[in-house]
Image (tube, rainbow, N blue to C red):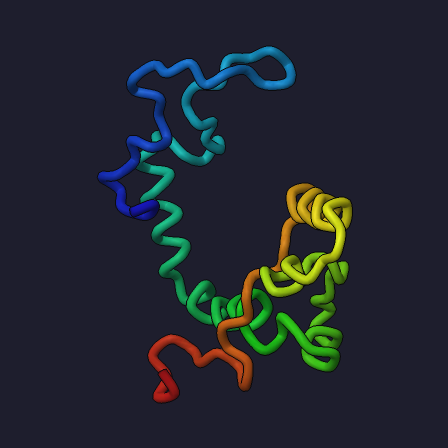
Length: 136
């Protein structure tokens, strides 16, 4: 839906909702678009074109490997890809459940809130195939 050029309404505050203010006191309203986008519709059309480009199709499997694949975990692949994070970023529900104190759980939650967590590994054995390859 994000790259559907007719579905741009999520970028504008058409109902004039009170969405608060920025740290500088400016009213939060429509999404501020980059200068190269003439309109919300143009923004989505250009993003869709970029996402469907040959370079994106070529690079996407590498990104999948880093975020969800074999380079997201493990000593060799993640280390070789310079894709390592603080150990707290890898905590999942099982590790959280085994924490003995409320303080330890609160610290883990705070760390996840402030710095994020690493997504679950979905593909773990080999590089993700290229778009249109016979390995799909």
